[in-house]
Length: 260
Ligand SMILES: C[S@@+](CC[C@H](N)C(=O)[O-])C[C@H]1O[C@@H](n2cnc3c(N)ncnc32)[C@H](O)[C@@H]1O
Image (cartoon, rainbow, N blue to C red; front, side):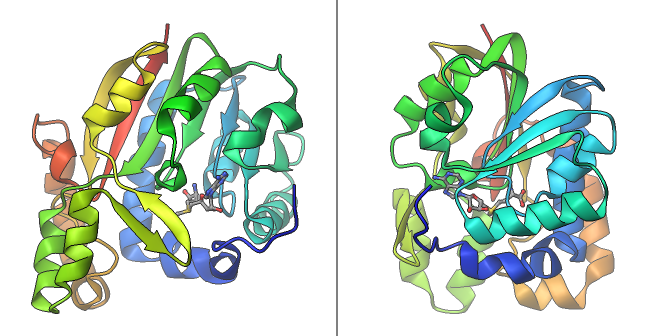
């Protein structure tokens, strides 16, 4: 991969402290990991795209699941390598510095996996999801699952938080489905759009909302001051997460697809 600095490089060092290790980040991640454990079993080998600092790769490997973890950010990959080394999980986790559009050149054409995961919005960095859906689906064996956690377009919580702070332009950017962040184009999707892109290759089996009652990380006033309240909101959110309108009105949605 080229050595160009990626926007996520600058976040890598503090990513776990500022997201994964916070009360809110921990609650959100454990919901996604519970879902992964429903789909994958020890002995499976998964492809992870946009693995970040390797939190999920480490979690799954500790439960007997093998992972090929990939990411476009050299710093994120370095952080994942250090974590996997520290936990002595190298025999279960293979780490590759690779954009999700370049998997063929790094993995070769023929390699297939028992499943695929993409957690916390990596796919929102894709500007051509239809093409990517075809190449990612090809990587999974028939009957295998794809777990995708993607940022949605319509987030009432964020309208409220940003609205209170007068940041109406940001509300509008997400509503119209596109924004630029550190020079990178970010697309916001509805569950229906993603399901349509994957529909020639995969059937949807489950879609759950994540961050419907729980606030987005930008709502710092609530996130830092009321950790107890976050647990209560999480409890109720888990009960409501699969109701029909919830995934479309959540910060992220978790979509499970089954390869045809
Ligand atoms: C919000 S982070 C999520 C990281 C991780 N999945 C997690 O659960 O913490 C998004 C990740 O997507 C990666 N990413 C963005 N565009 C990418 C691309 N084109 N190919 C591969 N990874 C990409 C970034 O480097 C970053 O690590």
